[in-house]
Image 1 (tube, rainbow, N blue to C red):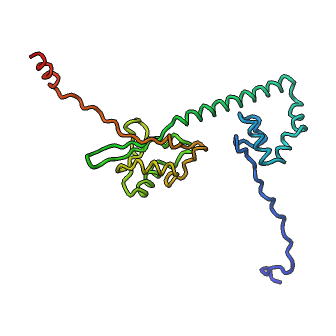
Image 2 (image 1 turned 45 degrees about the vertical axis):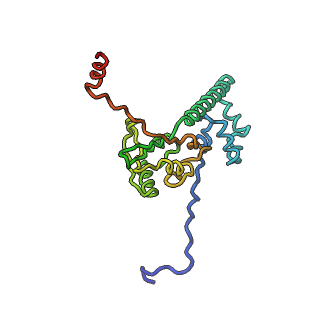
Image 3 (image 1 turned 30 degrees about the vertical axis):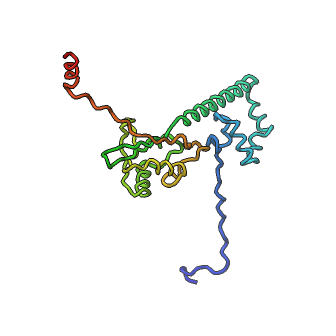
Length: 229
């Protein structure tokens, strides 16, 4: 047999690679379950782990595991850790409640703005206030332009300096409001009300406030002069 000929007969297979590990991360605090005790929501973490991965929960929170953890701690240290964990959870719950109240006070404002007697625009402001955030405003703007068959662009808000808003050509405030409420594209990724998204009452349509024109020079003096006569 030449050196280039392949060997005949059965070839012994090499060792197979081990199956890849699938790490588990807590859906509440995003830590590995072994470290949930250091988060500010350890009670919720434990409840999630017990329902989603009962075997892992039993391993981490078994009497034996807890005994081993506490073996190196004094009674005072164990009590202090328990009190600190309770404080963290209370602070986290208070913050979540505060954030929820703040979110309910936020609004998406659709402002109708007259440009000429026949032309108008609609400014869409406040989409950035809700979480999870929508795609970039330019993406939303392009979607509105396509759905409404009109022009739309992103520009700096005149009423809220430093913040971007979408300006759509035409008086389309009611149409945009219906699209947001029904979560129609491009608002299909906006969360529902129960998940932190805006409710119907938080989507407000309003007219642009007209600025008072300054009095022409001399008008005041003429009126005063007429009164003196």
